[in-house]
Length: 629
Image (tube, rainbow, N blue to C red; front, side, top):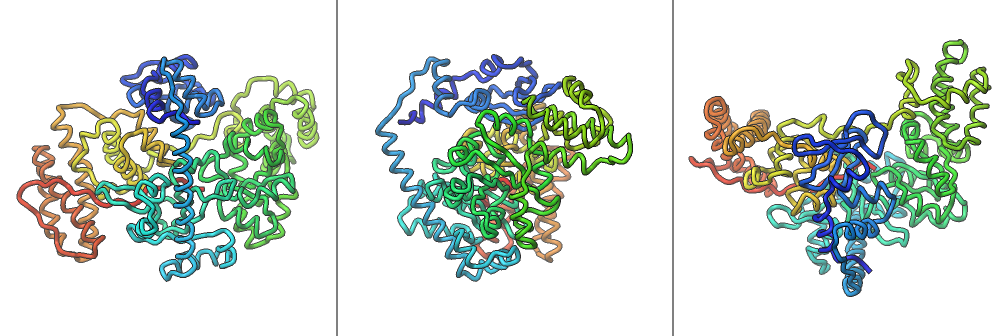
């Protein structure tokens, strides 16, 4: 029995997210936003921002984000339905539960699983037989994976064509809605069905029952993000799906242990090396939902992350989960460079030993501190002791800490009582802790990268307007105007969805992070609206035109002689009349769109330039990406 979708929307819209969050933390108004101390990590300055208009929050410190439902779920550790029901009671909304709808949903799910399975077959056949998959086959061989491995894991190749998969599955009587719902395709701005994955090595993702529910696609050219996962769909939720669990679950239960990796090829490498109880998360950190799923098979978890990732993993989270779920967490003894797949290719026996020699999380972190310390001098031992104190302090179990205190006291030669007194004091920064990466992890959360740091501010500003006031960009903005791959992905997702919430629901990884950050940032709105619009158009179009002109000149393309005068008009008008600049800029948008449309169709004629500005015809965009797995 499910909640009627319309009621979920009503609950979300009826919830005052500021009032809800204010019950847990103190919020202060800052312009049109509210700020406060993040409830999801310890901080002294306010980095948590709430947008009451869009109903979303984002922390610029730890990068968490979401809506009212997400906030309640994450803070109270409850499931989706429970969160919706609590908010509905709060808003005085009577929820409707539709058995007929649940039946229809089951039928739809079955149809979507069929579509996903058909896509697995399509991609797999292309990898094995198609000439355009030669590069993918060569890449797999370079990593040590032969045809048998490709067949075992049902790997595939997504051709670089515009809609090859979509046309094939439509021929099999799958509807446009089916393909869009399962994340295999999307309907672009030209109302055409377009493949979600293009030019990528495909790793099909199956649920525990063995049904295909999504994909991870790896680029082999360096274009776009390295990995792209399926968007969230009725079948696929990255926080609840583990790659390889369908194959590994029997071995996990039989061996009473599970090995958790970071990537798809790591799972393959472990399985081929003789560790068939390995799984991986799909472009996300391990979640509480993942742990709850795994504890039904085993209580013994081995983390097979590379050394840096394991060292930066939030130790407090693992210690809490160990106590809450009664699990035992160890860390595989992998070398400090390379990943499990690389180690399998060079030394399969070492990969096996890394699992058999796995150590407890605290042992792993303390050993890294010891290895990085100069234990031959009093000063070095003192710095080692200070760093170890902060790691020891992470564990809340006093009996567990006692055993490790004895170990550290033996290594450093300092008195056991000193460590107990030091642990009892509040954590403070010292010269040693500032230098030590392990202690930084103990004192504050590892900040996720800020997705806006490398993107042109003009492209970011256009995206802010696209989110907060789409009327400012409608009818002229185009994919061709963006240069940053992440900005392109965010724009295309916004263009292919009907609302900000629909876009965030379909996004993952850096795309989701950038969307949610922009959702709490206001666009610059100084000045009269028409002039502001003109400045926005010129600011985004002019650099795009300059990039195109450089490409045309390098290629010896005669169109450079047509583009150059238009850019000159924009430059001249920008210094005197923004509206004249806008007119020329819109003319250039139309030229860019025509050029890209001609390129995709194989034509090469010079685009026509009219005396009056034209509306830009939308470019048929590439698929939206996802984070590295």
